Image (cartoon, rainbow, N blue to C red; front, top):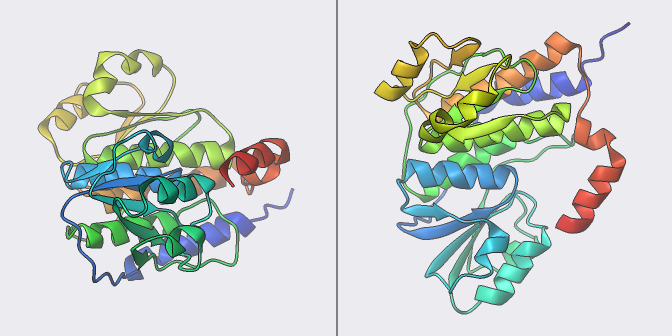
Length: 278
């Protein structure tokens, strides 16, 4: 059977562009509520951890029940989900709204006080990979934080992996779990380091456990504990760990001879998802 590599090739090409990707952001935010969904929520969780809560991540639908904060950063690559229109109606004129989007002509951009553009375009519909890196770099620039450049490496995922991370790397763990759902249509888990030890660890038998490393001493203790099927990235930064996710997903697709994107194939679920979102 011939191995088609259309999706794999496209994702590999995006991975090659990671280290050449630069962002230009003039706006700076000291404190704000950040909100987003899907990959944008993963980026939201990541920037919350990176800024130690200076930028706080809140689910967009939950945010509708909040009192108006001073500033809201709405993160959406497409700018299309209807929940952001509801947020604009709810908080317009009460909160400063900053739209972080790749679509400056979208509804969310038009309703914002400030638009910060994510430098990403693609002619092929793919699960978010380079777009996630572009979003995260844009948010880091907006929050005035930086990371030292590192190179991500492949870790073995297997089936139904369990991802762990602390602080900003919990957002990367959440991102990794999203990719497993979108590409393979399989279950996986993401958890914070301390919470993982208190109960979810008991659900890992026969599954690969991947720790997105930051060099923390408690992570080292877990790595040295001799846990079966345990893998740790060699990174110390969230951007490096995000690259490791992308490389590892592509590697797993090749291992399985899997040139498919599950969410694009499952039309019934995709229609339900799209109808609810848009």
